[in-house]
Image (cartoon, rainbow, N blue to C red; front, side, top):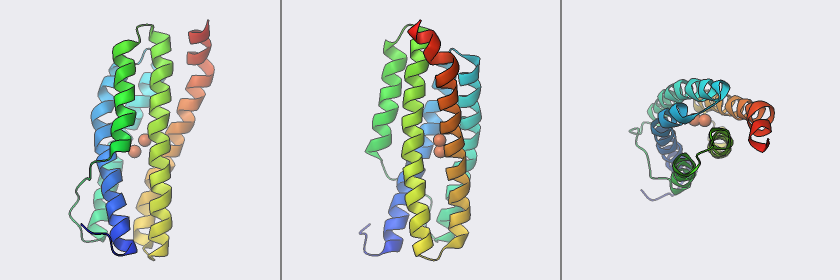
Length: 163
Ligand SMILES: [Fe+2]
Ligand SMILES: [Fe+2]
């Protein structure tokens, strides 16, 4: 699709984050399995469930724009997920692995936060309040997940990994 208008640009970026959310959904179960700390395991599993709801909300946004819900390959998220996978293959110490996975998971959250921030700004410009509500709901969950990961990192995991 050729991007000509702001609406085209919005839809292209919507496809990008839709692809990203689906890749994240695929990557999270193995991260949940590999997480050593109980808190991290729980946080990742909770966010996996939230991510299912986020995909649903994005499908609603596609519907609002009368476009079929389809992803567009996003190299950025592929790279971040590849890094997480590499950690899971390479790091043997469970506490160091938790720290590495938290780092990758936060990179994912920050990617999502920037995409949703942009999409909300563009939806606002397009006067699409209906889409803004759905996008804001996703953004709120990404920010909360990022915050929780920071807390887990600062308390348990990093202290133990450095010991
Ligand atoms: Fe997400
Ligand atoms: Fe997320």
